[in-house]
Image (cartoon, helix red, strand yellow):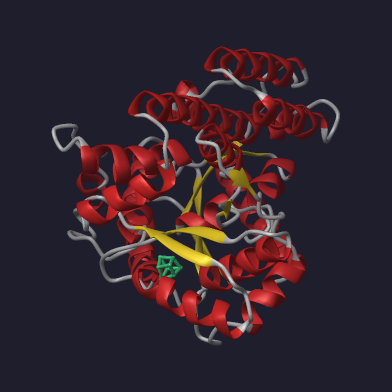
Amino acid sequence: MRVTFPHLGNLWIPAKAFLSSLGHDVITPPPTTKRTLSIGASHTPDGACLPLKVTMGNFIEAVELGADTILMAGGIGPCRLGYYCELQRRALARAGCNAQLIVVEPPRSDFRGFANVVRTIKRRATLGHVLEASRLAWAKFQAVDALDQAANMARWREVSPGDVDAYIGRGLALLDAAETCDDVRHVAEQTLHDVEGCIEVTPRQAVHVGVVGEIYVVMEPAVNMDVCKKLGRLGAQVVQPLTFSHWIESHVVCDIARWIPKPDVLSWSRPYLRHFVGGHGVESVGHSVEMARLGLHGVVHLAPMTCMPEIVAQSILPSVSLAEGIPVMSLAVDEHTADVGFDTRLEAFVDLLLANVHENGKTPPYPAACPVST
Ligand code: SF4
């Protein structure tokens, strides 16, 4: 099998490690570009949400590179992800792509289906071998999250612009090459140390901004116009509560090991939204409330155009903003979104937050747990 999967931020590093460890020939999907988007959009319905279009583009580009098997996450609840695999199967056939699409459903919805997919992927590997591959992939998931988080915390006070991203880029390349969990730990520690070495030591006033929204647009910089990087360059320290390890813990580990309690976002969202609305709608509301109560200065909410769960969240966030006293800016993203429009709105938002900070002078405690000290 020449296996590929959707391109989503740095997911390719642990996904490649896991599949290669099981002996698969992995075709890493090329990074998402304008070409990816335009290929995807031309094979999908106009009103479909952006993740469907981008992942279609990823698949076709990977098939062009020789992939014959595609792994795609399934979904449940009031979100269109659940039927995307069918649309994608038909669109791939129409595009003349001769590849098998394997859907990995959440274990909670279809445990037998999930187990069958695991059996197909593991091929002749023993259980010990699968556990070893999972351990390495999990170490890489945690490491890429730590590096992303460190970059978000550090960019706003780097001494020479671009240094943080240069160190992070080098660290990610080394993580990709790392063959053992010890190597992964060593690379992560060294990169975090390098990042700390290139930031100002004199503290100055920052604005602390949370980024919430649908997971695909939050995690893929090519789709969200590099929003975290832009906010950092504007002088904002960014907190992004959605991470790969968080997603795997709540959607895979807690579904299999049901005695482990799921991260409780509902208790934060409950005064405003009491039930699951699909996708990450509850998380968007819950994390915004959480960040307001922990003293962050503002929230940027990212939503793919036509995404139902995020439309629900977007309609509730103004109430959260008023009641919790935190400015929230929602930005919708589709294939026509341009950098310049984002730049203008982010600049105006950060200016407003800086003015608030100078008036109130409060500094939030929230980022204290993050890997780069503030
Ligand atoms: S959460 Fe929204 S954007 Fe994501 S797949 Fe579902 S409908 Fe589409």
